[in-house]
Image 1: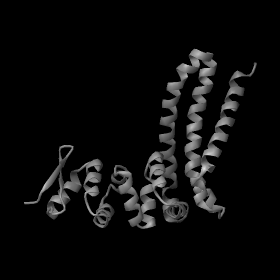
Image 2 (image 1 turned 90 degrees about the horizontal axis):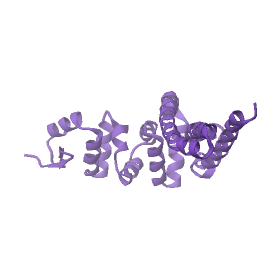
Image 3 (image 1 turned 180 degrees about the horizontal axis):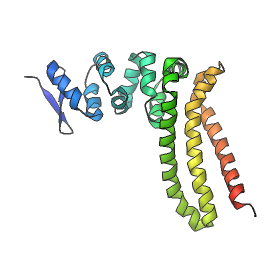
Image 4 (image 1 turned 180 degrees about the vertical axis):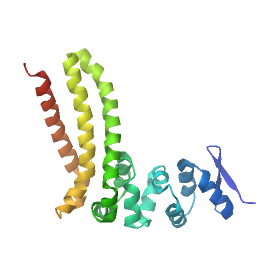
Length: 219
């Protein structure tokens, strides 16, 4: 009888689990539980099991950062790129920071070229926009009352609209820059430095003053 570990009330198969138990677990488990299971496996075995999962990206998202980095080094670049394109932007940044500069450059090059980028570009744009809009609206709701109390309704509107647009622009810049640099035959690893932050900040200032000028200028 195979031994099992209980996690979040779910029995997770151990290394000596029967294949039938493993298949049953994979078919019914939540990605959180699948991630916990992968983390107890040796790296090579975890890599093979991750490749076989239908919910690879969702499971990968819930792995600890050190486990993500370890698997990222074992997976083929095309496989890793396919997973990364489905991760939320904050998860991509966290993973990216765990990689060496050489690994970052290889991953960015794979994301910027080949079938993965072309196939997933529209889905990736749509997903990023939805996440950025949700985050921007949430932040706008938080800062709107502050602007209302300190500057009135017009200032509150300027600050709220700026917050939404800045978050959206920053997210799109961070996602699109590696692709653009690759098309220009420049070093894609440059996008991992302060370039994204600099561009996003500059655009943010322009957005703020543009909205302020439009809404606060004397009629």
